[in-house]
Structure formats: structure tokens, C-alpha cells
Length: 218
Image (tube, rainbow, N blue to C red):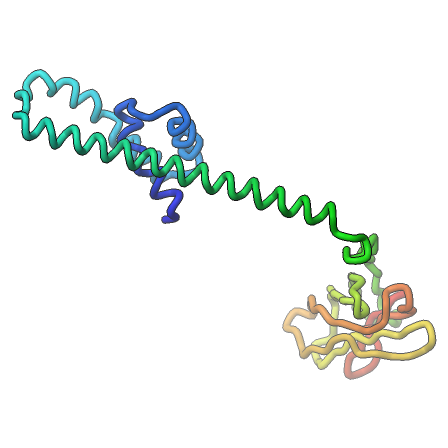
């Protein structure tokens, strides 16, 4: 149970007895929809105010010592509620100040110190069977990175025997191995690999098994 939750839960008794200030009542009622335990406790305790009112005429007036103790408890409760309100307001104020400082830092940061904006987006490449008799198909998601490309392969129809590799060919004819894996029980695989070749420089993507190319990009 978080510190905030414990503080709000302490408001339940005063809420039942109608002793909360409007701000605290709003905080407690806003908390209820998201907290099953507080709702359950409120439901179980809902009859207490009525029972206390019905029992009040039969309760003898407390002696002066008990009245003083009751007053002291009431003052302590009010002091606790006030302290909790102050802590909440202090956290809210600190959050506002931090947001303002961050906004100011963003405004005054020289353009040369800001990270360059990027509009690069991932591309999906379809993979088709390498031969007319092959069954392998899939897709390759090419996600641009500062160091090259993250390649997420999803393929089906792979042969029963591995191992397999994901091979990348660039436009100059160079080759890189982006990933490798073993046999899969159902011929389906999803694996993420990496290559230093940028997406715009990739000319071909191939999945290779023990007997050669299984599926590849057009």
C-alpha cells in the first residue's frame, strides 16, 4: 500500500461522519472508483453513523476527563488532516515547479545542444519462397537505428531441420549475418537481429537453412 493510499484511507472515518473539508472529500471520492479495498471498507462501514446516532441517547455523558480526552483526539485528528493536506499541496507545488524548470530549460537550450529530430520510420518487407517448391514466407520489420538497422523477422513454413540464419545484402554486394537460430517445432519463428547496413542501403533479405535459401525479399 503506497503512502498516498494510506493517507487517503485515513480519511474514510471522517468521510463517513461528514467531518471532511470539501477539498479532502473531493480527493477521497476521486480515489474510490480506482480502489476496491477502500470501496469495500466504505460499504462495510456505511451503517456505523446511523448506529452511532441511534445509540447516542442511551450513552451517558462522559465525565470531564473523558470529554477532555475526546477533545484531544479530535484536535489530533484535525492536526493530522491538516498535515496531510499540507504534504499533498507541497508535492503538487514541487511538481509544478519542476515542470516549470524543465520547460524553461527546453526554451533556453541552444539549438546545437538539442538532439536532432528524426522522421525515420520502420518499414515492413515481404519475404517470399525462394523457389517454387518452398513453403517459407514471412515479413521483415526494418527499424532504423543510429548504428544501422534492427531487423525483426517473422517467418512460417520453415523446414524441420535447422540451423537457420538471417542474411542481409547491401547495394554494393556486401553480406552481413543479422541473426541465427535453431530448429523450431512448428516451423514458425519470430527473432530480432541487427545489421550495420542502413535500411535504405539494404538490397536483399534472405532466410537461409542447411539446404540453402528458404525465403527472401523480392
